Length: 495
Image (tube, rainbow, N blue to C red; front, side, top):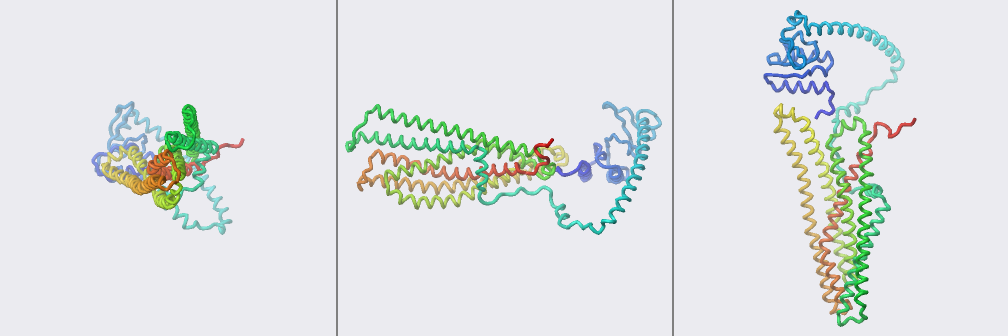
């Protein structure tokens, strides 16, 4: 891309690239203006001039400088888009028109600059002599520059983006919760627990209501109106708890987005030029687009679904254990297997997500650089090479994406097994509850089995959400990284 090159370096590289093409016609848009006089003269003599590398080619040099006009084979003087004079150097001087006047002014300016340069040289010589005298007194204190510094300077300025290893630090989770507001997050947990608890109570109430039609029901029957009123009240409280929990989560998510995005932009705007010289544009765009989008929309949903799954698993197991206490014996080994799957899958999914994020940045960078340099790429016939490079970067990104999808399918098969085991034992114990005289009503058994039927989906969804939360929280980690880079100046200036 050449983001670390000066104007003169870019000009020389462009000219060298053009020379290597060995074309018949060269249109040069003032490439010597970006370099100093000595370098410009050297380039003209060895490349552009009559004895240079391109002497056998047609060279059209567009320039506002008059230094090299004497050696041109033909001079075209233009004004307002049209040619007003044309000919060789000596011919144009004899005509005493625009070109002749320009040369006279140029000669006067050159003589004045030479006088100024002579005075400046005298001043510099005096100052240099003074500095040399002072330096002799301190000569013994001077030290040689360590070789390590030279080696550092020879290293590449832009380094490959690193990939974090291991678990996401707890400070990243705390950072997100603080940004979202701790009171709002606690309020969300409490109101969602109210919603989940009253949902379970409503199921038990419906079970008790259905038991009244059982001839073996020993208790007194309640008035139908009272039954309906209590059932409606439980449903209303459940709905209110759910709406309040969503409202708290919504405000918490908005807070987190604002409080993480604002420091990122503020810090980027105050970053030194060195940061932008050593950081490709794609990395910055990736954090300001994909990572912020993840924090904006995906993390709040992941949090909601994760808490929902945890509460659903707890209530399901509670209902089954209340209905069939022997189910506790089955829960322990199934929980151990479930945790083993978690410990194997979650780190894998987390690292795959990190690799996916890191390999997305080169795609953005290469695309942006190709758009900026499209004219040069097409002019030099390098479209195929850039397309191939782009395909390689996209392929690398797709590999990470594909492995992520495959790991999800691996998990789904194993969680289906655990869920089916829960359903099987819940139905088995419910079937034998009457034979073993556990005193469990038919309505309660129905609630137990109906909750167990959803456990497979809930278990699968829970692990996915655990993985998604841990994977997407990486976006907070990446945004924080660029929110804490060194600043060029302080945020405020003391007066």
